[in-house]
Image (cartoon, rainbow, N blue to C red; front, side):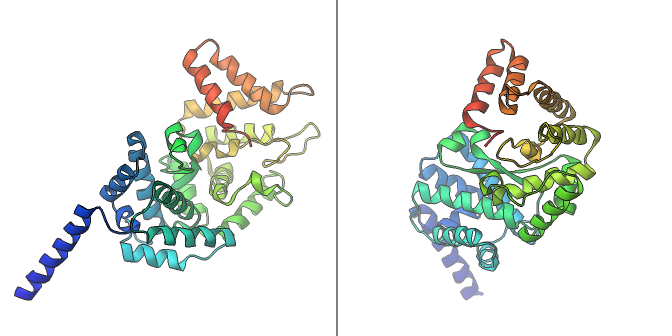
Length: 315
C-alpha cells in the first residue's frame, strides 16, 4: 500500500513539475482542452481564435478515434502510425508526428500541427459528423494566425445522416463514391479536372453534396439543382467542378443552413445563372446578384467585399 501511494505521489509530482515549467511535448498539450489553450496562449495566438481552435482540435481527436471519445496520448500515436494513404497524406502525417514530439514548439510548429491534425481527421476520421472548411472564409482572425482549416460538427439531421451512414470513411472508397455519383446524377466528370479545383481535403465536402443530391430535403435538393444549372454551359453540358466556371458552391453544405438560408442561396444562384450571358461571366453575374441583394446596407456590402477579397466561392 505504501509503495502504491508513493508511486501515485511521484506521478502527480512529475505531472505538476511539467505543468509548472511549461514543458512537455506538443502532443501532451494537444490531447486536452486546457493544454490546447495553454500552448496557443503561450505562442501568441489571438485570444479570440482560441475557443474555435480548441473545438477543432477536440473534433479532430474524436473523429480519429475508434471510440466515441478523444484518444489518449498512446492511442493517438498508434492511430497516426496506422495511417497510410497517398504520398501527400503520408508526408503530412510524418510532419505532424515530428511536430507532436517537439518539446519547445514555436508558433508555426503549433499552427502547422493543428492544420495537419484537422487535415488527417477530415481524411481518415472514423467518427463524428464533421466537415472541413477553409479557415480564411470563416474567420479573418484564424487566417491571420496561420490556420488553414476548420472542422465543425454538422447538426443538420439529413446532412449528419449522410456523413455518418452514407459517405465512406476510407479516402479511396470516397473517391470511388464521388465518381459513381457524378456519373449517376450527370454532374460531369472528374477525369480531366485540374487538381487545384478539387484538393484531397475538399473531397468529403463534395461527397456530402452528392449524398444530399439523393437523400437531401426538398430545400437542399432545390439548391443542388440550382448549382447544377449554374454548372451547365450554353450547349447544355454540365461540369460541376470546372476551371472554366470555377465556382465551389458544392461546398456550401459544409456549414449548417436552415431553410431560409437554403432558399436565399437558391434564389441568388438562380438569378446569377439567368443574368449571365455572352458579355457577363457567371462569376460576375453572381457578385452582381449579391450586390443587388445588399442594396445600400453597409454591413451586407462589407460582407460582399470580404467574400470577393477572399474569393470564397470561386477558385
